View 1 (cartoon, rainbow, N blue to C red):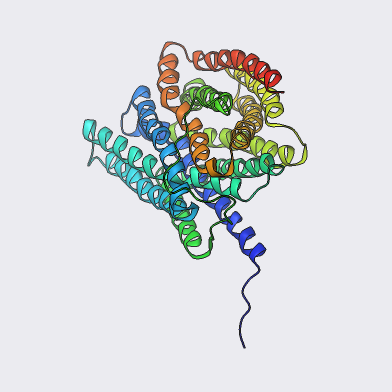
View 2 (view 1 turned 120 degrees about the vertical axis):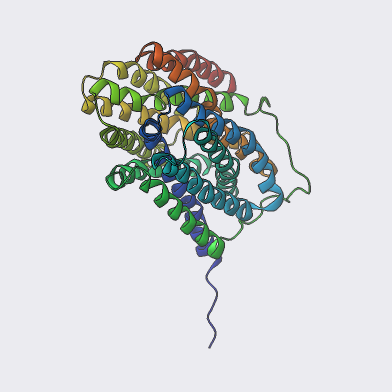
Length: 403
C-alpha cells in the first residue's frame, strides 16, 4: 500500500501560510525589541540619543542589505534566502539580549556594552533583511495581477499581527524579566525556521530565473514614487515610535516596567487597527494602490497632530490606534504598487527595495526624533505631522498623472 502525495495546490497553500508565519515570527521579535529598548537602555544607563543610534545603525544595515537579498533570492530561490534570514534573526536576537543581560548584571558597562549592543543589532539586521525580501517575492510569485494588492495586504497583515502579539507578549513576560520576551522571540523564530526547512516548497516559476543578479535602481520611474512614499511614511513613523516610550514615561511619571506595559498596550492597539485595515478592508474593498495611499496619508496626519494633546494613557492609546489604521492602508498601497510596476523576473529585486523602505525610514528617524525630544517632548510628533503634508499632495499629483 502506497501513500499518495499531497495535492500540489494544498502544498502551495501550506507553503504560503509558512511564509506568512515566518514574517509573523520576525514581526513579533521586532515589536518586542521596540517595546523594550527604551526601558532596557535606561536600565544600563544609556541616553535617549544613544538608544536611537542603535536603531539607526541596524536600520541603515537593513536598508543596504535588503536589495542585495532581493536580488539574491532571484538567483538562489526563495526558500534558502528565507531560511538564512530566519536563522540570522534567531542568532542575532540571542546575542543582543545577552549583551543587555550582562549589562544588567554589571558584567558589561560603558563603551564596551554600547559597542556590543550596536554590533549585535547590525549583525542581526544584515541577515534578517533576507526574510521580508524573500517573502515579498514569494507572494508576488504566487499571486496574479488581480490578487497582488490583496496578497501584499495579507503579507502586511502577518507582519502587523506580529506587532500585535509582540507587545502583548512583552508586557506579559516583562513581569518575569525585561529580557525574557527577547529569548522567547528567538525561540519562536527558530521554530519557524524548522517548519520552513521541512515543509516549504519553491513557488512555480512564472519566469525563467536569471543567471546573474538583476539590479534595479531606487530611482526607476516605474516604481520610484511608491518607494519614496514608503520611505517617507516610515521616516515619520520612526520619529514617533522611537520617542513614544520616553513620552509615556515622562508625561505620566511611570517606572521602567510600567512604561513597557503601557507602551506595549499602545503598540498592540495600533497594530490591531493596522491589521484590521490590511486583513479586512484591503482584501474586501477593491481599491487601487494609489487610492489606499490617498486615504491612509491624511489619517496619519490626523494621528500625529493629536498625539501631543493626549491627557491620559487611554487617550494616547486611541491616537496610536488612528496611526495604526492609516499605516495599514498606506503600507499595502506602496508595496503592491511597486510590485505591479515590474515584470515577473524583477519581483525579487523590487521586493528587496520594498523591504528597504521601512528600514530606510528608521535610519535617520530615531536620531531626528530623540534630538527633537530633548528640545521639546512634543516636537517629534509635530515634525511627523508636517512631513505628511507634502506627501499627501505628492501622492495626489502622482495619482492623477499615473491615471
